[in-house]
Image 1 (cartoon, one colour):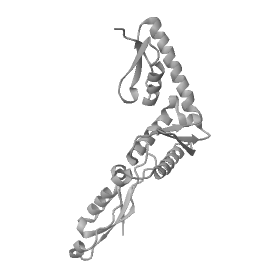
Image 2 (cartoon, one colour):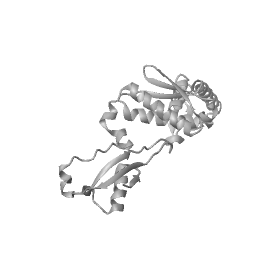
Image 3 (tube, helix red, strand yellow):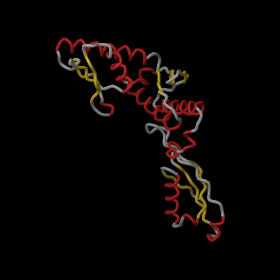
Image 4 (tube, one colour):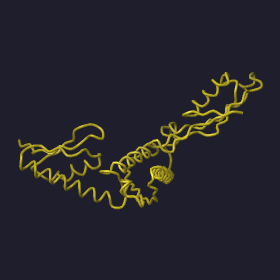
Length: 237
């Protein structure tokens, strides 16, 4: 029998029903591939089903419905996925990261470490610069996806960090240096300084680093990935 494809199982079934000019009650559905949404457009696979016309439509109601596996979108929001163990989620997330980095030409091996509030995935690769990207854009995008995946599958608050070599440590030092430089400029000129847009965890470094500087204060402005920190003179009352 012919097979039919779609973005998910239901779309594949609808495609087959339209081609065969039959209703759902007149066919038996065999799921050959549940499909996969993928990350960043990589690893995406279509759902594939086979539709077999029932010889006796009147008996359809007496037979058990064909098993239909949940689509990846269902997996992200269903209760069973929320109850996965930490070890299961860690292994699956490592597999996703390995697949994505292989697709973009930066294959990695992964070692995971834990502390009280964060889990760090150490990505070892021969192409560190390519994996990090300009100003950390590539590794930060992957970290956002990893955090989103973890939040969908696990209960409780845990920060997911992707590390390549000692990049996070070096970047924290650079961000702290930028914060100090901005503070000196603000004190010297009396004018606010707008830092380059940064992800939330880097803005947190700046806020914390300048919290003890009583001459300046900080706040964030902007939306999304264009959100940045403004350093200005501390208000006196």
